[in-house]
Image (cartoon, one colour):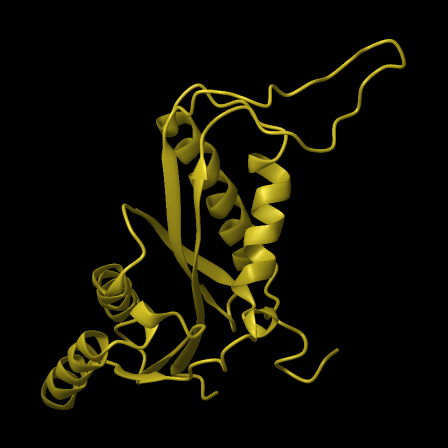
Length: 190
């Protein structure tokens, strides 16, 4: 990548129900910790996110569905946020809404406007089918789930969103202050 380019690993996490979740928990020898098998959900969430690999920064929002419109929304957010860059690369798995004609038509419009106004060009680098392990953001979602989803009991969707926003905010702040690229294998540092 050039200094004026950004590469994003993109995916969704969820939908997951907001309810009491099991996970690792430190309990005393006489304590018993159980999670009811049957619970009423307090709602559900889908997190749509992009991880910029050079700066290790996550851009996220909450979606109602996994579809092309959400990918268009994310693309527009990234084009605006990284408007000073010359080119941005979007990489995602082979889900149908990631490779739809509607999305590629929208990217074509963005590139047409960029040629005139000087905004960033958008290119895609889709991952092969069945290669989710290559999507670096999956490890970020895994860490987020272990930290704040597993072993949780949020009383509302709003409370869960606050915890998720705080997690990504703290994570972004940490890597802003301590720069490190995401994805060692991608950079040949495994």
